[in-house]
Image 1 (cartoon, rainbow, N blue to C red):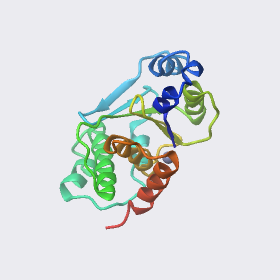
Image 2: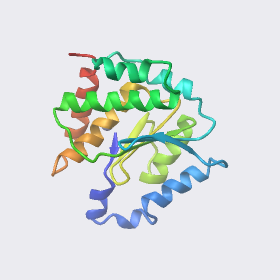
Image 3: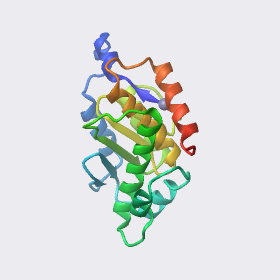
Length: 196
Ligand SMILES: [Zn+2]
C-alpha cells in the first residue's frame, strides 16, 4: 500500500491535511513515545525505532525469505562477527538490491526511511494521522517523506520488499504509475523474491 499525498495535494485536497506530513508524523510518534527514538542505517537506508524494540526480534523477522544474494552480501547479514545493527542494515540493503534486480532498474540517490512502531495499533494510528482513514495494512509507503511505516508485529522481509518496490518505482518513473499498476508491480516483486 502507499499513500500518494503529492497528487492529492495537487488536485486541491490540501484542506484535508491541515498540517504538513512531517509535523503530523512527529505528533503521531510523540503521542506514543516518551523517550527519543533510535536510528541505524547508512546513506541509502535508515531505520527509526523506539528503544523498546528488540533488535534480535527485528532481525529474525527480516530473515523469513531465502532469495538469491552474492556471497559477500550473505556474509554481511549473516556473519555473527558483525554487530546486529550492521547485519540488519545489510539485510535491508540486500532486499533493496533484490527488488531493484527484479524490476531491472537502479535509481540513484535513493534514501529510504523505515519507521518501525511498537505494535499494529500504533501503525494504524500513524496511518490515520496521515491519511485520515483507518487501515489494517501491515505497512505503507508515504511518497512525500520517502518513508515506509510498519511495526515490529507486522514487519517481515516480504512486507519490506513490497514497500521498497513502491519506493523504487516512485523514484524511477518520471510519471508515477496509477495506484493499481503500482500495487500489481509490488505484488509481483514479492512473488518473485525467491526466484533466480
Ligand atoms: Zn502496496
